[in-house]
Image 1 (tube, rainbow, N blue to C red):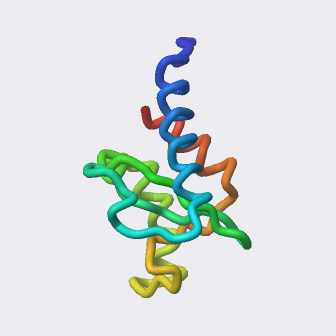
Image 2 (image 1 turned 45 degrees about the horizontal axis):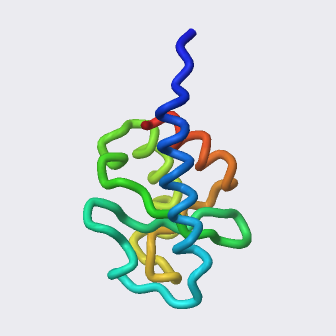
Length: 98
């Protein structure tokens, strides 16, 4: 079993940066760096994460995106993509994609 410490550390760094964006009172599309997009994650309270566009090519992330598609369609009340799952599940999944 291989340990993917560098990937996990990189994932945590990006997620830590995205938490900085989540703490900002106002958010605009200029907050999101080129090559990334924002998602709101959580079941009741939503937290904003910035993730790389490359995740869109990953089957596990695509499956995760099917949840909000079924629940919300293309109408997202927060103006961004909402993924209604626990934050820990999202972090575990995205950490494995690096």
